Length: 630
Image 1: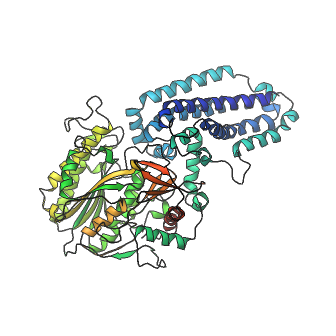
Image 2: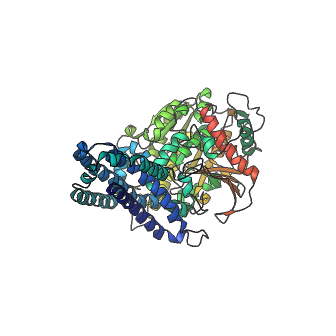
Image 3: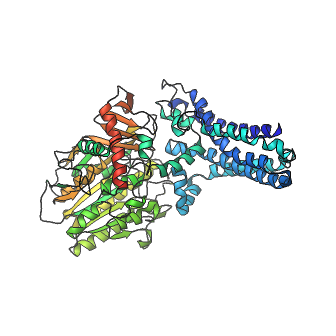
């Protein structure tokens, strides 16, 4: 019957577009998995399954209109479906064209980040115009050409179906709806198919190729809401008391009975007692991966390395700035789903270094070159103890303004000016400075640095070198000011510029640098495995006061410091203890690996370590949900 043929034709058209995209990715990234030992041809079979889910979803509305409405509405249905399919194919074409640049940047299919940034049109528009003019032009031409051809060729394509007897069409509704339902569910098991069904191999790139971009976006939006309420269904179940005790043991938190309102809050005695109220300045660097720390790119940071404690085995919590912000200001690890900086229950009374220093009379502030509303930073900082926000509007006559705000150089100048003013008033202070120059489209001012890449000024290497220039200028100027000798300085990255790799969690791309400089602190290199919460705990230790806090890490000068990391990559978690790693993937069995030569090598299951990675996930969600991290 014509109805079935028409629906099948549109199904095949959608499947064809998805197949072409998958084939192109397969060819482009073939060298990433050609010698992986996995059956990469199965990516097309698993891909067909998820493509079918998407195509069947889009066919539900046409089925309803074509089978349940009488012939009286033939013209209306014909017009509506022509418009409907233009919109559907425009969305499919746009998302699939955008997939290539998104994959090149983030090493994954489009996910929640693809839609999350739409809340910031100014920054996104500037980024698109600076870096993606050609892809946008290609997408616009492709969609326009397709829409024009489709509109011309489909003038009466649905009229003949609608003129068929209503009874003949109506009797097909139930069997065809059942067929679409089977296609959408794509499983006869207890649970319908989902994104995890595409993750059939140990090679992450093969899994990404098997996915469908449109489905990945939709599932990410759905899953981000689900993480807050149904974490146990995604990762597994564990009694909360067991989870808390496991996490405490792994982190090195001792002496708690877990019955208090803040389960990990404990008294930490300082190793550097003093009567002074030392200041704290944390300079958080955007996307500074450890691989960029070279004499050519970061000469200033390497010179400063000789003056303090250098961390050469530090790994970030996640791959987004809000994960780094939470790690370095609150000592929290990456909670499933959206980060705590953007979640509702953590907008007040969530622990930060501001809340622990406020009782001592500290003035606390967040200094940023862009608009602090981005990623909900303004709300989170002001709601969690910070007294002052310095953002783009507060800079008068800045040296350089880019897409993401004023330059790091302007940030450095403003910070020293503000810190000196507070010091002159005998006001102790603690501040987080957040850089922005090393962010696409990597815009930097002229005549500041000798370009690393002279052929392409606006690139990551030059942006990092300019960020390093700003670090050097900040310290050069700070050393001339009296506040310097009474201040603990931290320079640390929020995450790497681009986290990519073939492993299910590419651990080597979480490697970031950090440096702590303080008066009378012996220069040294700390080579034990460390986390961003460890950096915060160490900085507070150097302030010379005893503090009560729930930080999920320890000072490197504490006997309780553990050599662990918890890393989050998209929805996957990796708990690393030494060089053994347990990985948790939603709706999949836990796995154990050995981390060697920057690669994950499968090994025998370590059941205790696999239970511990689940314990971290359960605990972090519990601490947030019950508002116990304070």
